Length: 198
Image 1 (cartoon, rainbow, N blue to C red):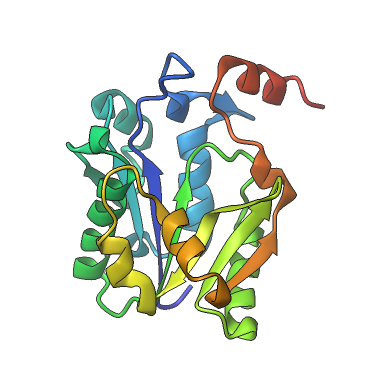
Image 2: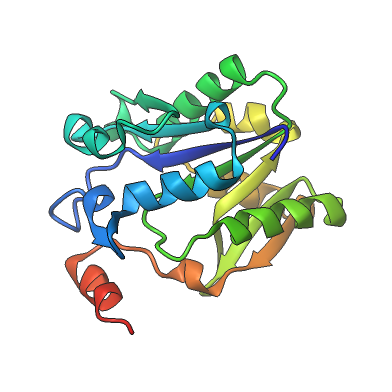
């Protein structure tokens, strides 16, 4: 994963879940540990930034032994843009040779290293500067942006996430079919459904 960084967004307060979804356990690991361990399989620790916000003391305790950049977005309530900016700043300071950057989340339990590797491969073969996951008739995370889009990412405001940049630059977007990306854990019923799957 040379010259590629990753920002894992995990700052939200899981309002629909009623408890931190980052700490929900699936197959013996919390969702936060799963994405962190997946990232560490293919990224150097210096290339990984985890953005926490709500209840960060409680949440960070489960990954204190991971040698990655963990930052606290005190402004998390303002929306996703501030978390993306916080992550970009840390990556660009610590990893100035970065040419590409993934934006990901912690509540996609089926996200594996192969998804990241295949998206990198697609970026290299497609000549497009943005590669995004496609599922459930939508384009979403994980999303890979080349350096060309670092400034627009830094200029997002409020509730705006990376999707705004994707929608504004569709002619520069390649999509990667990731059907299981549609499974994300927002509510207790989502979690129960996940646990009860064979």
